[in-house]
Image 1 (cartoon, rainbow, N blue to C red):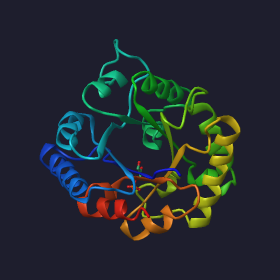
Image 2: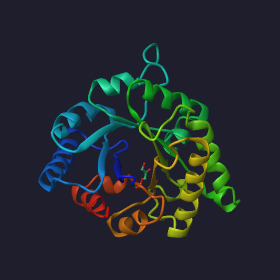
Image 3: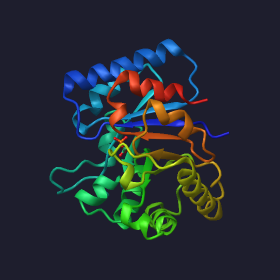
Image 4: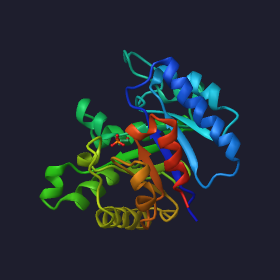
Length: 249
Ligand code: 13P
């Protein structure tokens, strides 16, 4: 009953020409296809959100930011507030991506504040969580992931305004994917935590991310409680991303 979401995280890639061609390619295919089996989201770098939103406006392709600040405005040089993202056509924002946690020292507490800022701006927050290789080797995966969700996702969150993305850090950009069994175990644990805490916990979408590509998408998307994918590298090519979209049953 949960409609899958296939999300592309372009990260710090694409100048205007490439980014707009990618957006146009996706929106043209989405228009040609008509009825889709999933929702589609692209998260371009901030420089391109406005133009990409213009290109995709009449299609089913939604646009999101990759991060937002906790405040609505103020003296925060270089940061972008959630209402600014909404103002230029974004409907979603990624928060707590492992690259933000690692490169910018973002804690789960800050990520909760960002999630609340996103909600206040009317955006759907895609809250990212995932264990490092070391944490997995220590057998701490479920504790780490559920601990991140417990703090990063605010009590007021609903399945309407919040999506969870499970991205094992060791699977991001490495070509190594978690096995079907590993994904199933973590997603089931996340689902159990959500249903215990939220009235609509069974309705939250839980995405898998980490080296998702056309060749493994169908298998990963068939795992119980996998309600879509958060795709990095393979979202930068129209053909690859479209194949992943078409992998939704
Ligand atoms: P890759 O698909 O390149 O492994 O990246 C995953 C990711 O971090 C998406 O947010």
